[in-house]
Length: 279
Length: 337
Ligand code: SF4
Image (cartoon, rainbow over all chains, first blue to last red; front, side):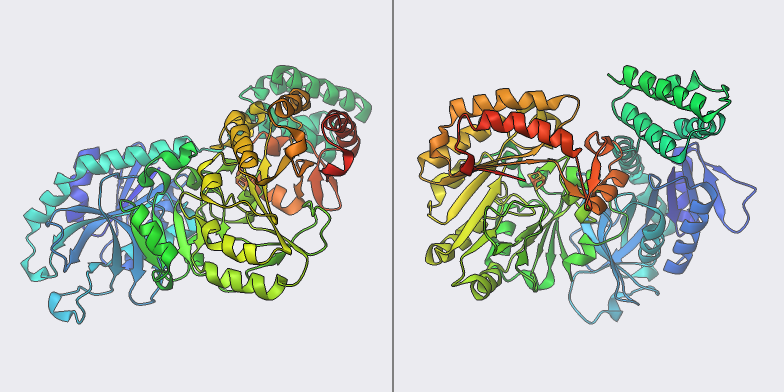
């Protein structure tokens, strides 16, 4: 599942339109929009809110570490290296309040410039700056990173920033901001595809069905704990070799052993079957 | 040059992380010059990156990043018992690099570190100082390519260039550089020395293909062995780890025979021979995270905390293999573990 967190409805609207997400009317604390494998939440401004919203979303729909958490939102900068509307990827996030640094593994978005982002708890104006250092400032990224640490792999969190202004927040224009997001939607789409693709190649072996069947076979056929361990290993090995141990196991489903001796015979037979298929 | 390093820097490293205090070292400047197109990220301490939670080792291996850091002590370690000591009681190792550019399926590094990114320490001088303080004047054995492949990494950071003069001045310190690399440039760039052994890890091509990802093929490695010998280097062959997986023990006899048809055994310093083995804790950790690994799904025996093949199987296979090896080499030149 892809989780997208935006601070403002203004940032969310073009994404909702692009992916044709539907508002989940059963959810009240937040505005949540759903598609088949995308869920978007509007968190409100600030790192606490973005962290809370990320965890809320994960608790609703999260299924494991292969879920992806994306923050898309605006950042201001004092650098004129990029035009307003430019899309950037954060490869380091510093929480200005705590001094903590966070590092997502950025494995995608070839060609998109990468920047360090400073996460502040209030809006930064160019007049507030005391040093000349290049800065990219936002208010949500640290919350996203803190929340992601618990539930996501380090390559499955992404902080995407679009330059809104040169630290002159008073000059912001809503229609322009919306158009910056719209302008970057196809890139966001292709990054999401990349992230999904990356995870697909690395999904763990799914032997859940086999596990359940092993459990019931062990009960019905009176297998000992040691036999269960051996059987599980054999099934895993067959799985790694690209075979289907499930079909061998299914043949024994529903059979009951009257004694441990009988169970032992079934055990040897099952192992033999799995191995035969594994050769 | 091995094929991995032939790729551009951009393909070789996803990012380069540099500790704030590591910028002002020649190694750092060298790396930055070599890889101008890789994103650079400044960090406070390499552990902030390396020890993060929730890193996916196998995925990072495919997009590994380089972390340049300044090592603070300790620089030198006593070697653990699962390693062959080749008869030295003062057996030490040192790690200029954490992790390896290759990705062998049986490698214990997968369980040792939370990250697959490569940490390269830039303060080589401090390593040399500690080696001098601890080992100078002793008859010692030092593995310098221990948790990594220093020669495989030579085209990124030529560590040996910083070390060779020191070891030339300390003939009592015997150095082993273990490698799977076929980087022949190395042997033309550096000087052979009496106290330096290049230990080539070799395996049947089928094993290389299946379990030693990104490493050069056997033929290229044999070529590098020959080139090292002809340049006057002392060479050890490490036939280790022998993998017994779906009848693979049969691959070894033809492999040995082919090896000694190509390489004159009289020119070798010695040969190391050993089976796949690993501490129980490391094994369990890797088994848990690398769920698609054939090697970690196999059956083993645990003896004194070490996971390996059953002793009777080891004995049987080893007897057969040693018989073949002893046709080429005298017994004293074959070290087993
Ligand atoms: S070459 Fe050695 S250190 Fe490198 S991955 Fe292979 S086994 Fe590990």
